[in-house]
Length: 126
Image 1 (cartoon, rainbow, N blue to C red):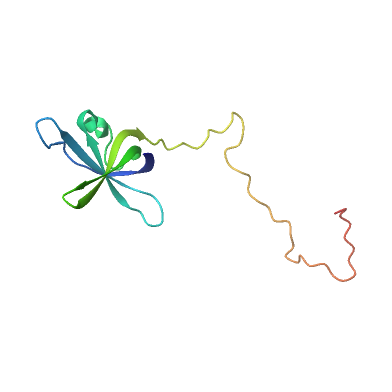
Image 2: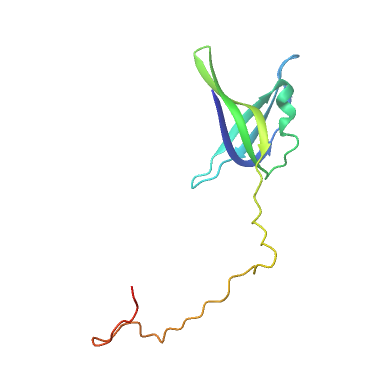
């Protein structure tokens, strides 16, 4: 089951050698939204360095698998990350050559009395 989520890299942990042949590294992202969540992911084996290029506070996209297992009557769930990408913040488009960069100021030509009197005739065709 492959999933993905975007968020700010909140915390990176050091790589831990669980056994002589298995290593894992955890990191936490903070999701966007009205109720931000702090979600912990795990990188394993040769993917432990995937979080190295990113610094805390970077917006990243995490591709991960949902893993679950049972051990001695207890159940464990891991979010196993397998790919990380930088989320680029799109800069505003550049103004075309010769085009004004700001809109002209609005001029109000109304005299403040926008209501027509009962005998006035509207000469507008619509």
